[in-house]
Each structure stands twice: as structure tokens, then as C-alpha cells.
Length: 137
Image (tube, rainbow, N blue to C red; front, side, top):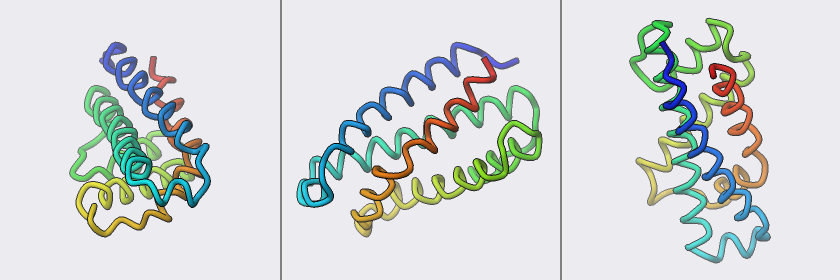
């Protein structure tokens, strides 16, 4: 059985991270790229936001017995197959997972331009995924 308190806590964290990220969007490209505190914060809070979604996905899939998760990419696939996510949103989540892996494992080679583009254009995808998990409450 899904534990609502788990999802509520993770959704609150996601909202907190997205609020911070939305504040970072106010900077111009140049202001963002020239300031390590800004792009470093964006990288970290993007990572945390994506990890919140992964935690929620793991909780839902495990507690509902929807399937076996071997890699993070299994989560969007399983949830889409079971009708909890659209294929389009599942594909966006797969791309986010790949981006999270770069943030975590290749942090010395992160392209700050990509971080800026994600910040400027893709936060709504994170909110949409959060909304998909809120439906389980």
C-alpha cells in the first residue's frame, strides 16, 4: 500500500527544489554562466529534484508490485506500461535520468550551457512528473 506521507514528503522536497530553481531562472545566460554559485546550485538542485522523482517512482512501483526495477530507466517504462504516465512524459523522464547521471558521475565535464537550457526550458517537465505522483495520494 502506498504510504501517503512518503509521497507528501517527497513532493514537498520537489516543490522546494523547483522553487529554488525557478529563482535561478531570473538570471540572464551570461549572469548564470559566469557565476559558479549559480550554476553549481542549479546543478545540485536539478539533481535533487530528479532524485526525488526517482524515490517516488521506486516507492510506487515497489508498494504496488508493478514490476522489477533493475535500473532507474525501468521506472518510467513500468509506470507508462501500467498507464500511470504517458509515453511522452516517460520519455522525458528517461532523458532527465540521463541528465542526472551526468550531474552525478561526470560533474567535471558538465556543459553549463545544457544546465542553463534545462533550467530555462524544462522545469515544467519536473512539475508534470510531480503531479503524476500526486495523483497517487
